[in-house]
Length: 230
Image (cartoon, one colour):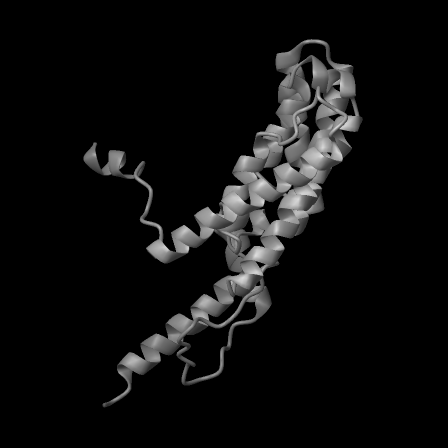
């Protein structure tokens, strides 16, 4: 029983206090900029939210784990746009809110998967389009453009500027670690091998093939270095 209960505990985050402080400051700056610019752009619209709640979750991803495939620019912009469109359509087509929200979120996830723009907070965008209240319902498809798309673009631009200013690759691309250990022999595995392993794992992993490949190369290099005679 104790072993089973321990599976519910999250693994420690492999980040330093400085990295967590960087992400925290980035989320603060990103949301402040997004809210301020949206307020200026929507100054004559007092009925709609200026900063939708899912942006908080998006900020955690974009600034806290910017290497995640779920946090890339196309993920947030495409995912939120698709989900808002589907959410509004579901709200207009299905009178009962609970079935409408279920259809909106499920359909949004299906389409995001097809378009390779899965972004978890987008599920909340779809739900908000249904359950956001009379102002959101009355706005209809205008809600998709403002505030959803505007919020998404602004937060993405803030993440692009801030993460790159902090020396992070965003949009993310695989790169060597800070202290690389080249393996003694060339890598014999191909990209297809890594794709096959990820597909055969049986569960979706929040990592790109290129990142997995780079980590594998580094691990082999460290093992080679440890086994070399001194």
